[in-house]
Amino acid sequence: MAEFSLSQEEIDFFHANGYLKPFKVYEKEEAEDMWDQIFEELVGVESKIYKPNKYHYDRHLDLNLLTDHATNPKIIHRLASLMGNDIFLWRTEVFSKSPGDKGTEWHQVESFAYANNKVPQLIQNEKSEWGIVLTVWTAWTECTKENGCLKFQPGTHKRMYFDESKTFEKKFDYDSTGFYGYTFADLKYDKDWEPKEEDAVYMEMQPGEAVIFTTRCIHGSAPNTSTDSRRYSTNARYVKGSTQIFPGMDKVTDHGEHYDLANYASVLVAGEDRHGHNKLTETNLNGHKFRHHIVGA
Image (cartoon, rainbow, N blue to C red; front, side, top):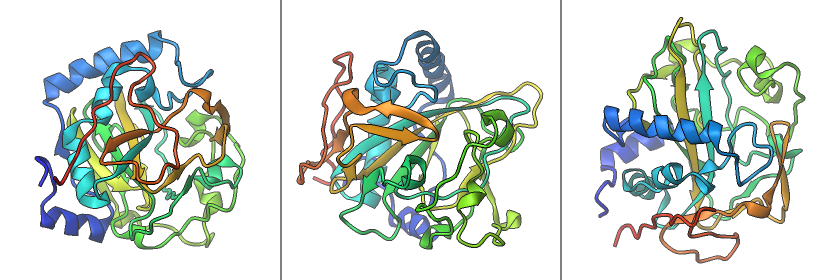
């Protein structure tokens, strides 16, 4: 068993709810220092992956601290308890929520086809009850209900409530909607269905804590109603080794932005590539090596 593997109780909780409770990746002071360095590079160093890169996608491929974070054994060993030993890192994202920002509306995703003109960004070749993608959401600042923490609808990963074969159009700017200028409710199978707010579980977290969830679990975030607290977080998204990432694509569309995939490669963070579906890299674009884990040995 790997050092940071989940207990059976934690695994059962995940399968019932679609997410895990927060766990500590870094001590608070370490996380705050890391974020100061990451933020300085995010705003000061031009992306080597995509140009432009408005939403800071996949900066693990050119920022060393994000490279190290996304392959941290405290994350990867836990993922292996849910995904098996062969794991790819697909994508990373950066999120901020300033005082006055709207909350992100309830949403649920699986293949991310809705964002790419109905073409799946991922093809699943090995079925699982939780879907295709597990996300690790890491808090770099204190995340509270007041400043816009993450929230979940427990157990909703067991069926799809949103139709990814639909598309939606940008209607407002990001600040108006909290979801890149889109209204995710446009994708609901049943326009009259609404998640019950009384069932929401709010994930208040300290700097350095992370939560793992399947993107099939309906999730969102609260608005930032504080006067002086900005919330920063990053996502890292992982798929099983049999998954095809950006299959047959040299370009991808995501939330209205267009990205050339020439500099993109997925990262084998644990186990082996037994299928050969995906372009891989062992180092980021600075030559900094990704950590690779053999788990369960």
